[in-house]
Image 1 (cartoon, helix red, strand yellow):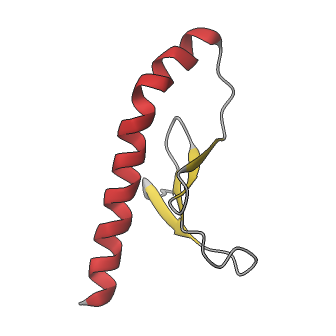
Image 2 (cartoon, rainbow, N blue to C red):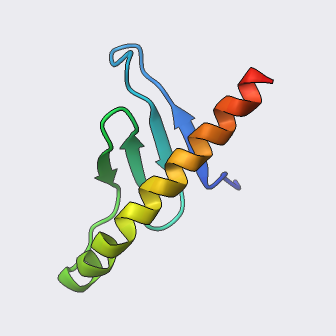
Length: 75
């Protein structure tokens, strides 16, 4: 099955949370309400150094995806 790079998610138990799920490596879910990020991968020390540098960019991409999706709903 082909998955989109990003997926929006919500949950009634967390009504203020806005989740964006990144389905490609490195897979993660971010709550845009507080920028809490959860990785679905296990990383070694070398990988973690690289991810720290890329995390800001990944948050930016997830936020841009969300903003674009919301614009489509408003149209």
